[in-house]
Amino acid sequence: MSVDERIERAAQILAASRHAVALTGAGHSTPSGIPDFRSPQSGLWEQADPMVVASIYGFRRDPQAFYDWIRPLARLMMEAQPNPGHHALATLEDLGVIRAVITQNIDELHHKAGSRRVLELHGSVRQATCTRCGRQVPSAEMWPAFVASGELPHCATCSGLLKPDVVLFGEMLPTGVLFEAQREADTCDAMVVAGSSLEVYPAAELPERAVRHGAQIILVNYEPTYMDDRAVVVIHDNVAVILPQIAARVQAMKGVA
Ligand SMILES: [Zn+2]
Image (cartoon, rainbow, N blue to C red):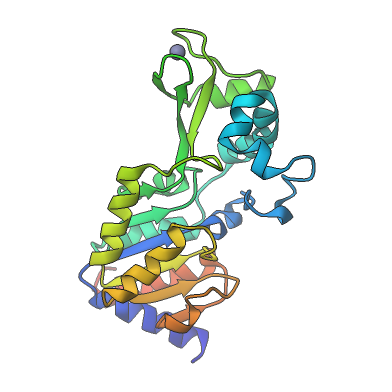
């Protein structure tokens, strides 16, 4: 099948589905300029061992090292804009096709693109929690101040250290969000896996659950994944190029101009 034929097939599956969901990973945000920060190739790890600096133990022992590491990433996330792939998923939600976007990303780009139901498995940079009094605060002001000064962000109430609400190595995933994502995987009839190499668990097992319950998998990712054999449509390309074409075809099939 040519790429055009595969795009057409993906659109047919989505247009006919009653309950589709999307699962996105780091590759969904790289066209927006955000590196895959779990990857050794990202350049973010030259000075640091991720299992130490970006772990909850590392954060407790040496928060300055954690914040020094995350500073360039935080700057990129502040400036990043959603790419056409994000907008395509928001369009598919508007069409009533996609019911939820499950994401491994913490960068908020799905929200910025207008997606309404976003299940953030690894948390997000939108909020932070005080490590002393437990108060949860929006981090819209924290990041610009921190990126500018490099000084550790503190709680306005008790001066305790703030920790971003992102899941660090060694931390549990937010249970409620994970259960919701698993329920989506169990009940969907189509799943678009976009920009995830399916190497980080438990997100990686969600397509497997979906297939077990009869869903059809559409996979758009540069690299092959362990699910390639079981997906109905596989396109090894850029999500920012492919997803808008799929969304446009679904729109046409649904008679939306
Ligand atoms: Zn506090």
